[in-house]
Image 1 (cartoon, helix red, strand yellow):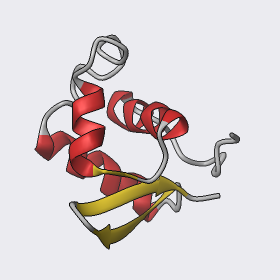
Image 2: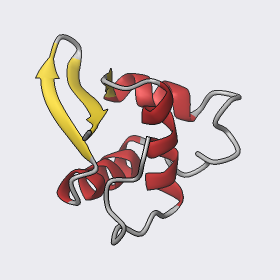
Image 3: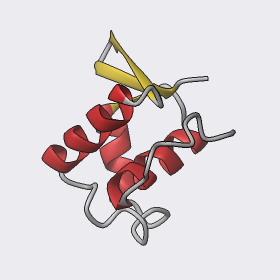
Image 4: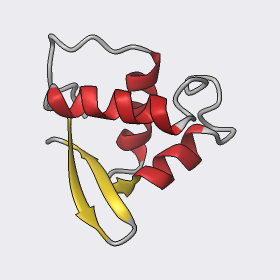
Length: 82
């Protein structure tokens, strides 16, 4: 999947979320946080495992048009904007 914006500068937290959504798209905030603290993502997601940090990073990505959210069963669901 291509990065949607050449002008968006990824930081550690947004890169973490982007990598997670590349693998599991259309998932809840809770699932993103679960994956961020898993063995698979521990190296790139050290800061993103907290709720506050996740919220700031995902909102930054949403504002840039990289991700979209929808409200569904289990809360907000996040997916890469294709």
